Length: 259
Image (cartoon, rainbow, N blue to C red; front, side, top):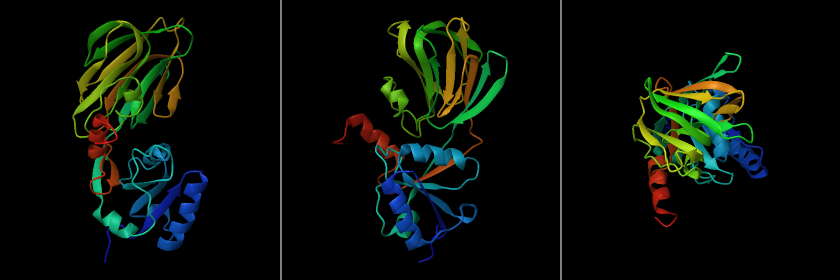
């Protein structure tokens, strides 16, 4: 059988299980250099998948993950046999990252992309005070909270869910704007925004109440303001076994493990 993905490059996390799987799979399916590969097979957990997606952002190379980590929400079940057949039958999920432009206290602008979320977090014992604008219009003059985050549908089951944010279907044209431990307004639960929204968050009393901004794993300290928008110019392609797509996993997450 001729496969679309006959040239496979393997990437593994640092865990013993992942390294051992890497050796066995490379021996069975070959060691294609990454630049020549049709597909990247990532062996590890969700952390490795995020790092792999960031590493190959903009290349168009599809990523197929197999779980050799802990949670593995973004990963397929680990099996060493019939890998070529599984790749051939795999379904594509295309996600787009968020673009964060953060301006620090020196006026320097920092750009970073996030697949899961952009979060703003207080750096000291004092609560952060933030002003929120959407598409150039101020929507909240002052939010007092530990922070706030903007999550993509793909990232809505990560930090966003832990902060009591909504789970979004993968194909929903939405972003979740979720406060982290809000103090005032105390009962504000956040907002659902269209994916085309441009969000601006200003830090009030920035000297007294410093705030950091984080795009997945990239952190900028002592920011004055952050602009966030989805970058639809970048496609990230994930491959999943039939019936195990991100859409299906997100749906199951809303009904519990027995669904």
